Image (cartoon, rainbow, N blue to C red):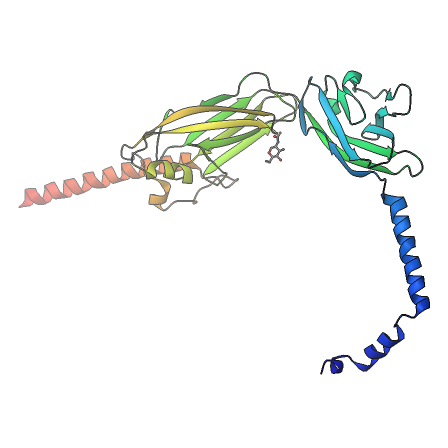
Length: 326
Ligand SMILES: *[C@@H]1O[C@H](CO)[C@@H](O)[C@H](O)[C@H]1NC(C)=O
C-alpha cells in the first residue's frame, strides 16, 4: 500500500539521486566549505548593535547617547556618531588619543563623559532635534560595519503654570458651559486634554474642543459643552452628584505634565428654558460648522413662553366670559 503512494516519476527521481561514494565525498567537501566560510564571516563578528537616544530632552540639559554592541572576539576599529549626515564624534581605540571631535553647529561634546559606547552632549539647543546615528566598525581583516539611527527631540518648556478659566461656576442641564486653558509658549507646542471627573471629554457636535498653537506664542484650548451634550447629561444622570471637577491637562511628550482643575457646581433646579430636544428643534438651526446655534434656541424658547402666556390669558378671558354668562 505504502509504495503505491509514490507516483512513478517520483520513484525514478529518487533512484537517480541515490548517492554513490563520489557524491558523498563531494557533499562533505561542500559542507566543510560552507562551515569554514560561515566561521570566517561570523565567528568573530560585530553583533546586536543597538542605539539608545533619549526621545525627548529639555533644552539646556545634557543628553547621553549610547550605542551597545557585541564584538565577540573581534577588535574594535572605530565608533562614529553623526547628527544627520555630519560626523561629530569618533572613538578609535588604537590611537594614542582615541577621541576625536568634529565641529558641528550647536554640538558641544562633553569629552569627560564620552567613550567607546557613549557620547554626552552638553547644553542641548532646539536645533539639535533630529536624527542621530551610531556606526561601529570592526578592525582588520573584516572591517565589518553596522549603523543604527534614532530620533531625539529637544524640548523648550513653557514658563509658568497653565491657567484655566470658566464662564460659569454653577451649571444647569440646559446651560452652555465654556472653559479656556492657556499655557505659555513651548517647543513643540503642548498638547491639551480635557477631563471631567477623571474622564476624558471627546469632541462631538455638542462638545466642542479647539486647540490653537503658534510657534513662540501661548497654546490655547477651549472646551464648550452645549445643552444635552453627553457629558452634561452624564453629570445630571446621578442624583448624588452636586459638583464636578473640570480638569485641563497640559503635556509635552513624556517630559512635561501639568494639570489645572476647577470644581463646578451642578444646579438641579427645574429647567427654566426648554431644551432643544424637547422642542424637537435639535439640529434645525446650526452654525456653518455643524454646531447648534443655541442663542437662537434660547430666543425661540422665550418666544414660546410669551406665546403660551398669551394663550393662557385668552383662555382665562373666555372662561371668565362663560362663567359671567351663566
Ligand atoms: C500630542 O499627542 C499626540 C497624540 O497622542 C502625540 O503624537 C504627540 O507627540 C503629542 N505632542 C506633544 C508635544 O506631546
